Image (cartoon, rainbow, N blue to C red; front, top):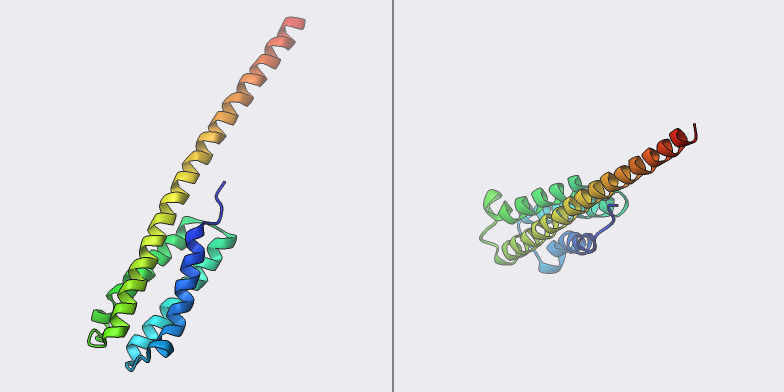
Length: 139
């Protein structure tokens, strides 16, 4: 069974920080502020969704958002603003790492679930075969 993961809670906290960080850090450049706020909203949305519907797609989405945020100082041209750059790179890499970790956990859980399902199916088949053999013996 796939369940919610502890990493998602940390991603929510990072996302909320990203939304607030332009104001807390006094970011002057609009691209830096918008990148942080939009990435924060996306991270929170995907992480909260993962609380209720833990699937691997949310983790790949947050991985992409995290990598994009980490690259955004150079892509959007605000690499000269030190606080915004450090914040974007650190938070982006943290979100990406947590998402990658969670994706691995989900993949393992899916494989375990498939193995358990196969074992249950084999047991049911054996029990059914035993019942058929008992019925044949009574005839």
